[in-house]
Amino acid sequence: MPVTDQAFVTLATNDVYCHGALVLGQSLRNHKTSRRLAVLITSQVSSAMRAALNTIFDTVVDVNEIDSNDSMHLALLERLELGVTFTKLHCWTLTQYSKCVFMDADTLVLCNIDELFDREELSAAPDSGWPDCFNSGVFVFKPSLKTYNLLLQFANEHGSFDGADQGLLNSFFNNWATTDINKHLPFLYNLSSSVVYTYAPAFQYFGKDAKVVHFLGPSKPWNYKYNPQTRTVIEDGSSSLSNSQLCFLQLWWTTYSSDVLPLLEKTQESSEPQIQREEPNLSGDESKLERGNPATSSSLPANEEHVSETVANSPDELFAKKDDVTSSVSELCIQPNPEVLSAEDERRKWEEGHIDYLGKDAFENIKKKLDSFLL
Ligand code: UDP
Ligand code: MN
Image (cartoon, rainbow, N blue to C red):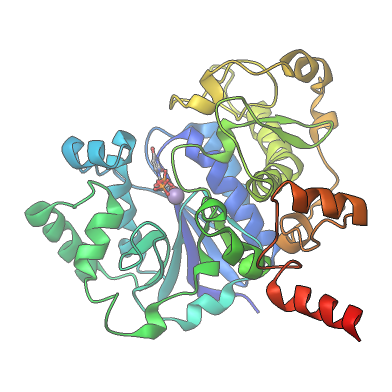
């Protein structure tokens, strides 16, 4: 049964972030949410994008852009472009809903997460950079004009310690870290893809249960290049990605190419010809995206030629079949089986000093082996 007074809400202030919003919305639909989908947009969003958003989202709401204009703190964060994230505050004006879950446009849902609506305002997951702060990429809130006005007033009086929405919201809901553990969402509801580096064993152990992946940071999925024929994301030389990060990116791109791109082709056709489409990089061509990004602006390594050759020419070639969408993160991203080595390779690894002290070469296992010889 659809629940009409609750909604997932996202934000896109330009066409580039709309690609993310469309994939997020589609991922919520693929996992059969019973809640409404709403997207906040600003005047910069083109009519072709609006048409596409309208087919996935129940409501597309035009809002004014709010910018923190706090270049000093944003410079410290090294994300000057994030002043406009103050626009997120408009989500509190959606009073047609009794409760909502806000999700950044750079998040991707991996399973049904409707249980989040059992939580109260303000519930969110810890930020991996400073876990006493919540990450504002996913949070449960209750729309209210009173709260909205208080937030604006707070922003005017105190600004934001990071120049973006996350600093502001953490100062406003300042007892999140200490008061009610029910307002702490498990990290699995906002798994930043970089955690794979910072605490790899935890990712290996818990990652299979991830529910939402958040492509936090300056490189977004739409900044990468993708080969639709091999259905692989192409790494460029300037960044090195772990297998797990590549898998998450692949998942985003699978949803994009199988569900969103066909939609964009359609809405593009029906919109005025002068509208210039900005879309993620499907080929080795130069990026057309607004925000400069090292991953797209640097030249591709040796595989560039190969990529241009294999890139599909017709839209049909780009579409993966819907059945092919792999949505289970454990299927794709976790590598549960440690490599199986021959006895000879095993000995060579030992001699080279590659010893798995915590795994098969742990003292316990060596002792067992010795015991078996002795007995
Ligand atoms: N956003 C937007 N336009 C922008 C920058 C951000 O619409 O130019 C929205 C979008 O929903 C995005 C969110 O604000 O997901 C927060 O920004 P971002 O995800 O880039 O920040 P990060 O999660 O990397 O800190
Ligand atoms: Mn984000």
